[in-house]
Figure 1: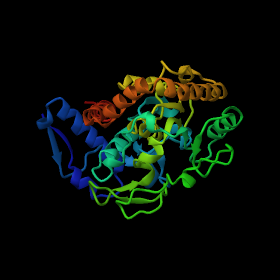
Figure 2: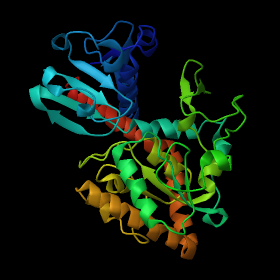
Figure 3: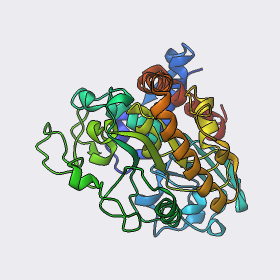
Figure 4: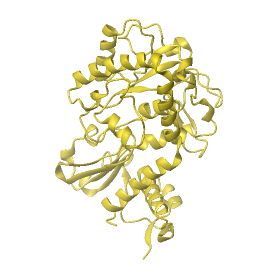
Length: 357
């Protein structure tokens, strides 16, 4: 018996169905991985199970009338709205986890940022902007991009201000806590490569995707070769800092791997262990990565700062060994088979949790 699903071209014409495109992409990837793609039949009529985008479709609707929602950008499900208002809801989010909440809310997800950055960095227009230089060319010690002034980021910067004497730390122009002369604007790192008629880096500026003219690609999701290549260690200040088994890993983490640089992560617990599960190598031989399992945020912040200092020192004495790890991570990140397998695993999850197949 054929497994019937909506034709992709058909539902793309119906409007806000971004989440549904990921669902069907995952299902198609899963059947293809199992060499059973001929068992799929895409029809022109909508399937009865249709995942709507929460943030565009149903802000003002009656939540009791809906069941399947998607929010594929970022954040934990309880990071966005009070769960007590929802019943019998399945919500797909943009990072990998399976969680259950009060009132029968179930969430399923995948590492969407991983797939997005991998696609962007493989884009032939920007492929040469990915850093491939060894640590020996690095002039500065640390790259610490802060972005939005979240509390955990401000606390980390305050720690560095008291304990970073002698380090050359590059930050963006937004942060006002860490006293450093090395700012991305002053160093010229925010000048974007002139392949898209863009003269100045602006994280919210977008241009058309190489693959599809209607897709918009934001500049902070693109490579910045000089910014990463000029710094030894990347401090990843992630979006959330929850104590969870399945962390949110945003573009900040994936860009560090893709740019071939060593890193420490201030984010959710188990961020480092999740990367290892995916086959990436981290830097536990050169710094103390026990911060990854520390539930107390204040302690974790201090431990990440210590690990950063250790890794900077190691980059000066064990550069070749660390370079080899970074090369492995970059090659694995770019490998399309890896992200295809992740997408297929998400498709299998959708079949089980949504379609009961």
